[in-house]
Length: 332
Image (tube, rainbow, N blue to C red; front, side, top):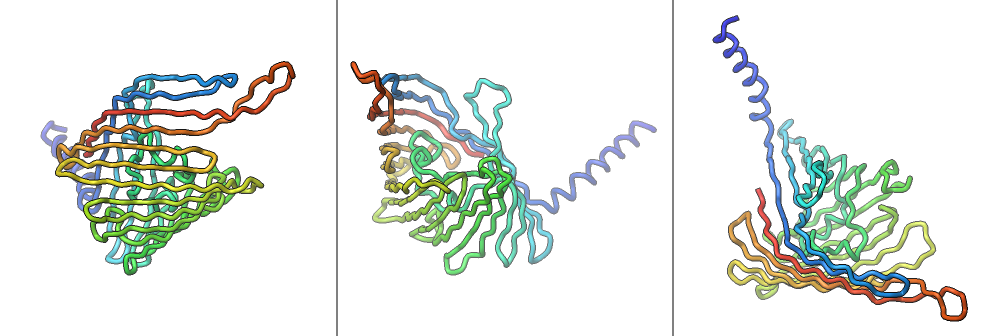
């Protein structure tokens, strides 16, 4: 076969393979790099003595790479999918990918159904109220429920009068479920980005999801140029005689031109409390510089030998961790 014929054949083959995908699929390749130069000062307890362990890091904060898209099956039915990985730029290992949301589903007038690895509805119900997500002040450090389960089925209704309902089923085959089926349900009102509505509010409940039963209520809105938010949570271990604990979080942000000032306070019984202060500087639509400071106080049980008695007594140590970071984030 001549070189010309081979070239024509190769071109025809590539065209046949690529053209249908390009024409039918709306594919979006995306990513985010968020990296900080950070100083960490954490306290630990050793034989009832409080010891400080400090270090400096250049660390990645949930940087990610993904692809998502949709395929129009008919005028009333669409298939959609997402495959996303976290990229840890500060990991010593070269294979530094970790699975994030990865699912496939169908949507139409009935709503949307998806199966795979996904955030629970309770996690999704927080909207954008956590102003220090993925950083040291992330609410997951004190609140349970920020879960991404590897074996889930999720259904969300269409939006009716700005109200949307959703439920996630966590299969007992998931390793984090300890052979228990779990459910996560949420009711949400408004736009979580606060662009289509001035208020976002939600209530959510977890039953036996990653070993916890959780009730969560969230609200965020715009008031006189401020973006104010709050969250209340009550949590308890599933199938346990332990009592439930509760806590709350408050957040506030204020924009001045390209600068956004923000602060957040969080507390949870028996887990401690946390203060965060920060500022973002928008260089361009996809790029920002930022700085933050987080201080977290918590109690930890320690054991110490009682003098002259030969018995151990429980000592409650009050510990404090501090984090300061300067970073850059770019989305694409």
